[in-house]
Image (cartoon, rainbow, N blue to C red; front, side, top):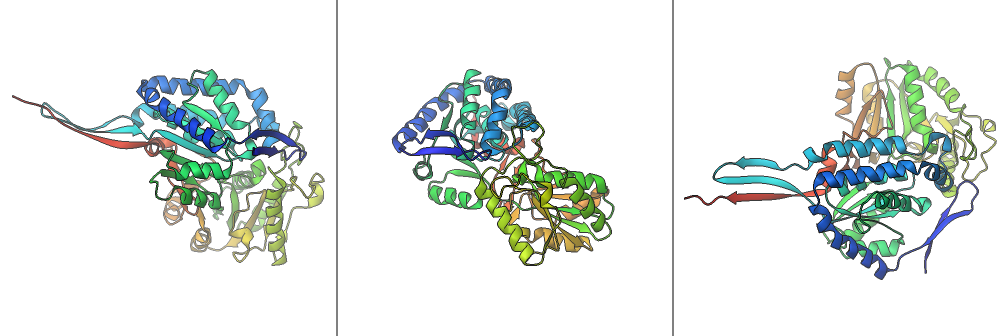
Amino acid sequence: MTMIQCISPVDGSVYAERPALSLEAAREAVARARKAQKEWARRPLEDRVQLVLKGVARLNEMADVVVPELAWQMGRPIKYGGEYRGFNERSNYVASIAADALAPLVVEASDRFERRIEREPHGVVFVIAPWNYPYMTAINTVAPALMAGNTVVLKHASQTLLVGERLVQAFVEAGVPDDVFQNVYLDHETASALIAAGSFNFINFTGSVEGGRSIERAAAGTFTGLGLELGGKDPGYVMEDADLDAAVDTLMDGATYNSGQCCCGIERIYVHESLYDSFVEKSVAWVSNYKLGNPLDPETTLGPMAHKRFARVVRAQIADAVAKGAKALVDPKLFPADDGGAYLAPQILVNVDHSMDFMREETFGPAVGIMKVRSDAEALELMNDSPYGLTASLWTKDAERAARIGRDIETGTVFMNRADYLDPALCWTGVKETGRGGSLSVLGFHNLTRPKSYHLKKVTA
């Protein structure tokens, strides 16, 4: 029997472990989901929406358990109170648009014909969720999928082993039938075998580029729909007319919050030469105010990375960049809790360029590089010099200029004067190696359903 373990970044202990399902047991779980789906879809839409919202409310009631569990599993300080703000905002928004998003598109309703396009649920949706924002990333698909009439099988990352349990517990206690929303523990081989067998009607995966490639390979030839949100190396561009203090505050938070473990975190910043020195100075001061330490301490503002192997990647990228001429500006003596393992001090590098992996490959840690630029054209070229494309953050007082530059950026979302935020009214999507598909917004509902056309000719005398 394979045991799936969560090794806590807090102290390196085994915080939780669960036995992985055998392939036979996993197939049985999927079969139950498929059997339950038609009856679930026949329920009125408003009933499904309200049951999902009751599940969301029930999870909110579990905050005293959920928040410290998150700290133990992936290291986010309890000071920040979990993920409830985004979790609730996204759930409530998709609930508010569900009726319109799923409404039939009526082409004709006359005495001769009824012609319309309806949205029909795919069937069984498989959600493979990541550890970095385990509740918010899961709910992006779970909530609209259930509202649309799908059943959902959820597999969470081993690093956040208990999150799927808590989500399903909350939803079932709120009245969602057991087989409609299930949490499963699967090893990679079993998950791949299920996908290759065409067990699911739609798969949503959030994780690494290599993970996405594995999903695509397993699904090859099954014609299963895929939604893939993969890597990121999101840029910020600070123009000469930017609000400097606001840019520093938002971009540094976007680069280091959650120990930099955010798919849309800011990993590289390009600053106009007129503001460069001031921006760098203020950024170093901002980052130096963090308190790195045990995430269960209410005074801690920066916890450990989720696993020491993730921190190892960040340290290696920084060391490589420094060896190639970069300069590290944050004094490590300010962060005595940095233990060379999961606890990692934040860092800002200058004298960086795109010959360094640090400026091109995903870092996914509390470290950011800052480069000086002279023009929009130079900044645009550098922003697009990346295999990824999730978001870009533009800082200027000129919305027309931001939109003009934004049209030429190879990315899924263009921000102006903000960063690192998922707006549930807009489609969350990416380009290049960041993946394909999209979640949330009206388009998120469309990705979780399929169109079915009705062409009904009425019998006339």
